[in-house]
Amino acid sequence: MKARLTVLGSGTSMGVPTIGCDCEVCHSSDPKDRRTRPSIMLEYNGKVVLIDTTPDFREQAIREQIKALDAVLYTHTHADHILGIDDLRPLSFHREQRIQLYARPEAAQFLRNMFKYIFDADYKYGGLAQVDLNEIDGPVELYGARFDPVKVMHGDAEILGFRFGSAAYLTDFSDIPEQSFQQLGGLDILFLDALRHRPHPTHSTIENSLRIVDRLKPKRAFFTHICHDLPHEATNATLPANAKLSYDGLKLDFEI
Image 1: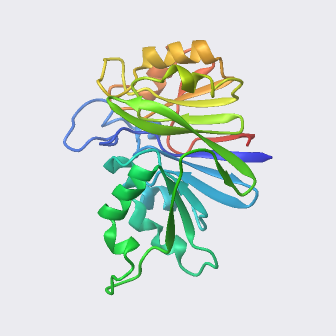
Image 2: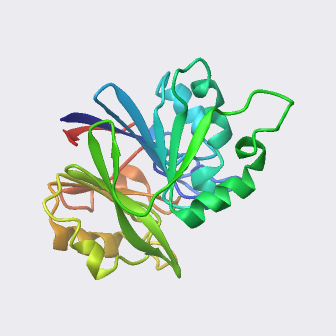
């Protein structure tokens, strides 16, 4: 089945430009150096599925002219991946079916606690996002496609990436367990965290992610969760042909 992947955001948790920063990348005129918080959109079989809802989701949705949404898969509960949940409201109104949200049990409980006004459904001062929160502990079948959770380590925390058809999306990781590598063979598209060149305790570097690309040999690899250390064009010029920085608005077609 044909699918399209759109990069809604390719930036780190503070985004690029970063508030108060005077560096060259933060003041770049290249639109590909403008990076909102990390998320992707998948379109297939007449449906729209997101991975994560960032604090920039409103801006991303307007930019991409998103008019409908069916489901959201959550990788983990850090602020840069969940705070856009309230902006699901206009997309959830006037629908026959509620938007379906999917998260690991502990992440789902965190979401229920943090956004209690949504999930307790007794808030009386405005429209609530019309959503259902589903706990997952294995593959999820959504609208004819299978989403396989891929466990990765984000520092000391175990979080999720996802494989869907011939593509996989792994954001916010510092290490990939050996068992998870077994889920990532034969890929057309692989998205990997690649924060910067300098080591970081909870994120992969360009060099580490290139080693992963060399091992898994996807046809196309794209780096995401990119900070302001990496100018888009200059960095891409140093990378091999099958691995490039992603950018906000990038669109890729693949088989899901």
